Length: 281
Image (cartoon, rainbow, N blue to C red):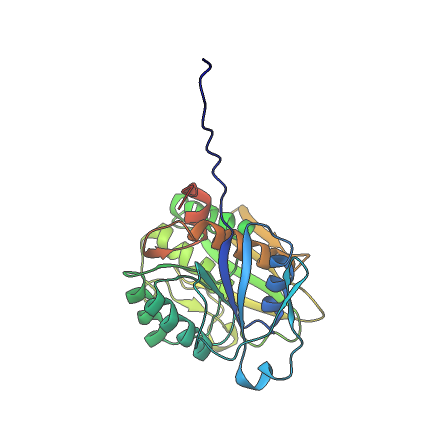
């Protein structure tokens, strides 16, 4: 008699995802990518109540279409929410993630200290990843800048960022995050390493330990960030240039895929690069 063998084939189920802010620039890019990515299934596309009734259904893969939702009532079971909305939209998404124990990728910026504290507290109950920029190249640049600032503690630091004419905030959130990397590398707080945004109000001489921030706005620049570390006779530059805004959506999906198997905690893109994704989570 021959032996009977049983072969078990493990099939990874697609990650159930919602996009918050689905009619924004990033939201639209995410929905387009999700429709063709077999790792995910898009189950919820949330927009403001004013936009929900005007928007056309969003492609959801396999020839399906998904109507936009104006909130989180009756939301299906989810594994991760990707947010690129507004401070108010982020607050509503966070409340749902806490109630349903859903992981959250937070890409919204411009929120206040109260929301910052809510996110930090929420990370004790759900997996939460936030970033000012979802480019994997910028995440590597941030790590390199932190190491360079630690190795060259007495060098002057200037950060220059350039974006399209329609960008509303200056300096960019990414530039401020790069400044935070400098502070981390040198072990100083924000009060010790003061930012200088406008030198016309200061004397000509540079104050030691400050971090200069310069912003350029024009045309359709997708985003450029340059960090300069300068000493007498030499200069080190770290530069990241964006030529396709789709990199931010791809980076957010990469982060969501990784975060779906992580335990509660406050994560960032450097964690995604440094830690392997847990399989079968």
